[in-house]
Length: 371
Image (cartoon, rainbow, N blue to C red; front, side, top):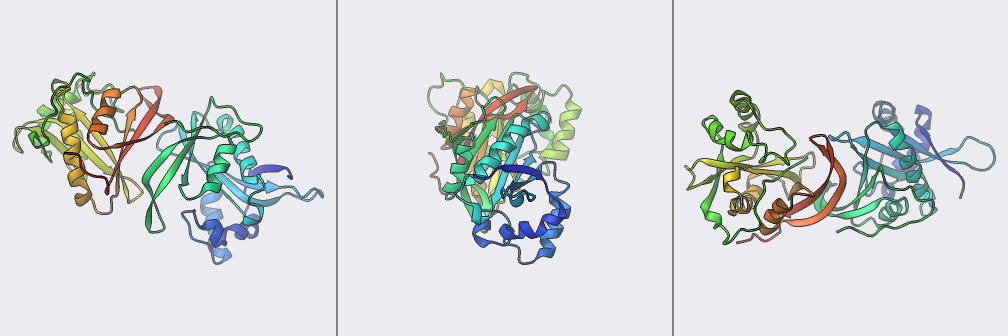
């Protein structure tokens, strides 16, 4: 195989880029539709590719001394977590099956961790029906972490996606190497493994918050133990919590108080479901006052949530939860509520100054409700 190199794009690369950007087969698993003319592609190059923090042309030497031809692209895009960037790659169809994409991804990984400050994890989401790209990721040294059900809205359909990762301590493979699968964050409250009889779901109700709930909310929001696995620190001021309720909780599309003793009962926790950029997917968060741990309250609240939320949030087909790998009790609460454990996401986020592995769970609209 001819040598594969990476370089920054130039506007003069537009014609070479058109070779794959206009190909329906190349674009089949990409978010974008095939380009029909050079003008919009040139605008994309100018407005998106050139200012992008890490977007490189895949180049292939011809062995005759001419400038290597641009045959594809590889990109690393920042996420909301500075430690984690997302990998993308695309290749002209004439060069499929020749190891070019694998070589390009290896080169990208070899330089990215040196060039991107604070980078700890590169991840790639590959359609479950795209085995060729899955092989590229695996041969390049990325580890298959799991299948995320209905994770991605793609050309009118919610798609299952395979999650891959490469972290800063992983070795760059020199030849084909396939890793076996290992079976923000949203954090959960702790539940004791010594729980006896499960709490009936009807004993817990959910309702919208109002500002009068601030003192009840302070019971868990100010507790360093209850907030140990949260991305936020415990509140020390009632006024700061009141501002959070007014500015974030009340206008939120789905943020509920978990109450005991009927709908008029005092809140003992909170559960939220937040839509993401993918219209089919929303993120779950839950927290509970420590006095109610180990009694099945969180599990009952989760059951009520999945029973209601798919009807309340139009277009949502998947609710997902990210739980710290060391928060075993919260993982049990999700599993008891019918959530499916999908993967361990390595070096996924920084929580309170520490790089953390996270377990991802999901509940999709066709899953059966747990009684």
